[in-house]
Length: 370
Picture 1 (cartoon, helix red, strand yellow):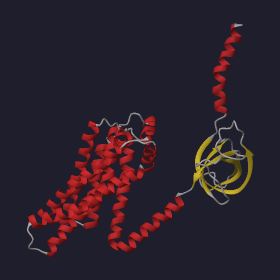
Picture 2 (tube, one colour; picture 1 turned 135 degrees about the vertical axis):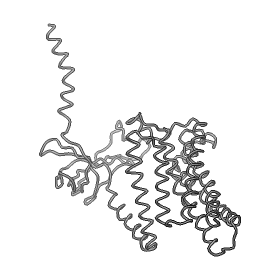
Picture 3 (cartoon, one colour; picture 1 turned 90 degrees about the vertical axis):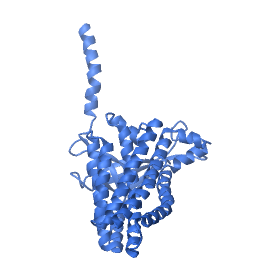
Picture 4 (cartoon, one colour; picture 1 turned 45 degrees about the vertical axis):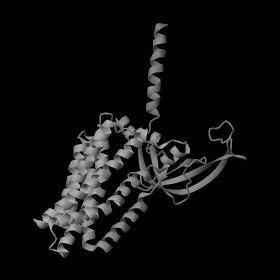
């Protein structure tokens, strides 16, 4: 009897594991596919179904599409299989048509059995055309300077995606990495665009001064407001997968990278304007050039601060509408962790802009009168 009970217990423990192993596909991967054929049927929704909407009038249906896919890439290119696609009236439904290109999760069970389902439409083909049009416009309008701007853009994107992100995931400090990348990108971008000149040196000094000041302000305010860097849903998902990462420093790295473009723009604009003034009137003194640079900076200040703040407001616009709908006050909204993080992000970048103006104006006037 004891042996029988032991055998039954062993079966209950081992069987689920074995069944799970048996039910696992040999391979799962995301691939691009094309919809070849679609046929559709309707099934009436029962009142007990989770899809049933009690507020809707009339008979409700779920549309079931029988879809035939053809894999367009990879080792399984040319494989054709069919699966069902449900359309329940939800916002995330995919209403497929013949010739649609979709991203599918393909499951291989054996050498002849495949199944899968569409997860989203393919957008990268259209995005690639959009990028090509942008590059063409940049080269046509900018000519040689457009080519140099494109080179600086490639350096910036490459530094973020091939240096900052991989090294941060390997355990490097993302804050110091972001500062180093900002320095390299600033120097490379401005020298590529303006060459080795006093104008370029002034812009570099002003930009780096503004970025460092923005990082310092963000650090102080974040400590005072107890921010952790885990305010966003994306950061929390990353935390679940990589809890050992320093999310406080990742938050700072995002602030520095986000502010760099606007601060660099201000630095280059003021430096260029001051040097043009000095070229047009060589009798101007250093103090006069500095005052002119500050006056130009004051005009730029308001619009560039708006640029940063409006960019962050635009990204959080649906969330702000949700707050307004539920009658949250301004002080209540500011107290939320994720909203405080966005405010710190916007204000820190604006502080960087403010410091970049006098630093660039002083450096430009100094180099011109030296």
